[in-house]
Length: 226
Ligand SMILES: Cc1cc2nc3c(=O)[nH]c(=O)nc-3n(C[C@H](O)[C@H](O)[C@H](O)COP(=O)(O)O)c2cc1C
Image 1 (cartoon, rainbow, N blue to C red):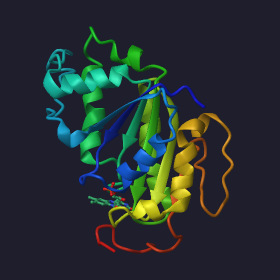
Image 2: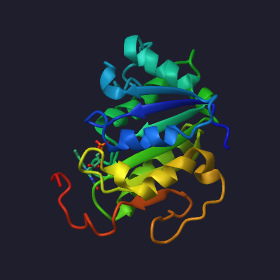
Image 3: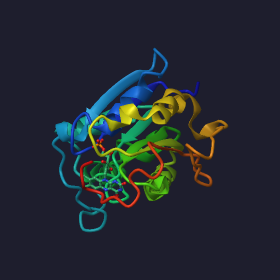
Image 4: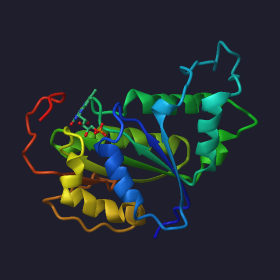
């Protein structure tokens, strides 16, 4: 079991209780009993738009208050940050994109020492998407790998399940649920043994891609319900 102790789950779907959250909750069931879990849906927070004060603002950023302060504190407290985002246009949802934009402001707070305190924490991704190929999530995985690297975090791995348009669909995806069981205990820091049929590994990234039924959603429009 990897050293997962305080896990912050950040949920960013535009619907509650959707496939991505369900997959994340399945994975979380297999965390060590003594691992602390904090679940935050971004819609429960009132966050400001990020303001770029690097030059015009003299390189200072207003000290966060309210929900932004709570999110910063939760981030700093965590050993592991799990981004729970459906794939939206090959990317994070806007809610979670904002989270990463706020990091830039937090990095300007001398009293926080954000970068120093993020160093060594792990960044994980759990995502679902409707269309094959699963490799369309590679952009998102790459974005998070780069973001982890910038903050000197450790990239820990991604769990990607394909075929999630109908709510709850992911719970019918046996492969995804199987992978969820060992997701936090394996990550990219240990060897993965994956078959070609239900998984793909991105070079250097080690993500687990789990199609629900190969071909089922091939060519389907992104936003059309089953
Ligand atoms: C705004 C929007 C953009 C989407 N973009 C993609 C996409 O680029 N690729 C894809 O395969 N599915 C896309 N989807 C489908 C969702 O990723 C998919 O239905 C996901 O399982 C929803 O997760 P949720 O149930 O947790 O909300 C999109 C859905 C929405 C609402």
